[in-house]
Image 1 (cartoon, rainbow, N blue to C red):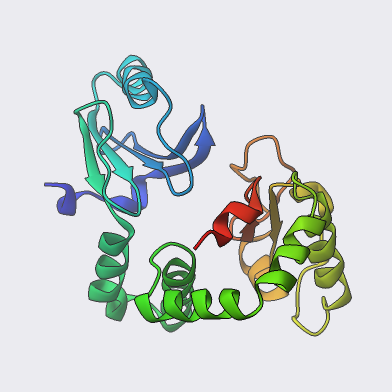
Image 2 (image 1 turned 180 degrees about the horizontal axis):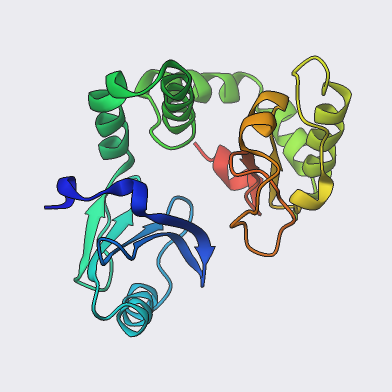
Length: 226
C-alpha cells in the first residue's frame, strides 16, 4: 500500500519535462505524478502524453497519476485519479498534528492561500461581489490601466516588495527569479533554512527550495466578472 512507502526516499521534481510535480523513489520503485489545473484546462491528449512519457522512463516502476483540480474534473486518460483541493486541505488538517510547529505554521499558511485563491468561501465570495458592485468604476479603471500582459502589475508588486524588504524581513528581491506572469521571492528565515542549495526550478537561478509565488493571469479583468 502507498501508506507503507518510505516517502523520505522520494526525489521531488517540479516542472520536470513539463510535469507539474513528479516524485520518484528508486528504493521503492515507485513514481507519482501530479498534474495541477486551476485556471486552465487540459490540452488535447496532455495526460495521455504524460502517461506515455512515464511508461517509457519508468516502465518497471509502480505508477500513480493524480489529476488535481478545484472541481474534481476527470483527465482524458483513464489512468489518472481525480482529486480536489478540498482533499488536500482535509488531508493536511487530519495529519498536521504530527508535524513540527514550524511546519504546521507553513501548512496553515498554505491552507489559507488555497481557501482564498482556489477554494472560495461562499461568504468571502459574497463580500467580494458586494465590494465590486459598490466600486465597479474604480476597480475597472485600475484593471483597465494594467497592461494585458501584466507588466504594470508586475512592476507595482516588485517595487512594493523592494520598498518593504526590511519591514517584511524578506531576502533581497531577485528579479531574475520571476517573469511577468509570476513573481517569486522568499523571506530571510526561509532562505537561511532552505537556501544555498541546488534547485529543481527549471531554467531559473533560484537557489532556495521554498519560495512564495504570486501568479498573475494574462487577462486579469475576466476574474472580476460577476
